[in-house]
View: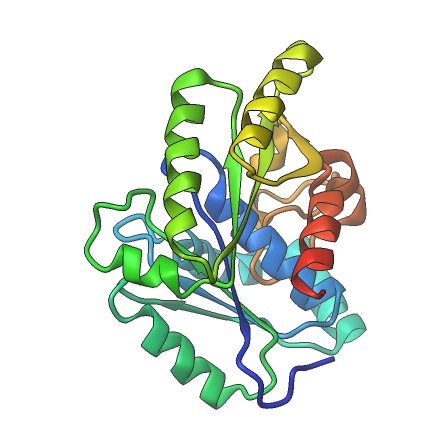
Length: 249
């Protein structure tokens, strides 16, 4: 299932709030697409100096061979899916599109390239890079200050007509009243900002990387497919179903 020589779709989980989980969603969506949906993907990590995705890949390459359970799991998974790991490259915001084009030239069957962007529009070159995205998915939290920042970001995207942008609720506390989200959804509707149906719950245990492997299964990993049970309980699987239905239209 590849796109031949077509340009891969450029996707980013973007926000102007730190700690919103954009790097985690980038890895999860890329791994679901690549390892479970048989799509061909790459990630370009532009979020300097954190470089969360690139550093995750580095930690996994260093630590998985040292963990017998993970090593056996990796061998089994690669055998089952008959698929090598996807590319993770670092780049500056100014050079990210050039990097993407180089990757796409070398890997002519790429379907998606995910960009992990910096959490601020003040970084040099970021607006030009944002303008090149085909789809942006913005995680929101039910915090007034954070929501105002995210709303400003989503409204800023309006100047780029080529970009299709969507919001979704993240870190949802089950104790929060439904009426609160109804009110915020009404506000977003007034600005004609589409919001996905899936809400991602606030669950600390789903922040574990592959090297924190337990019997619960794999969640965030650039080298291993996430476990179906973890995807279901975290609702990330349902979120990605929505996302890829939109992207593949």
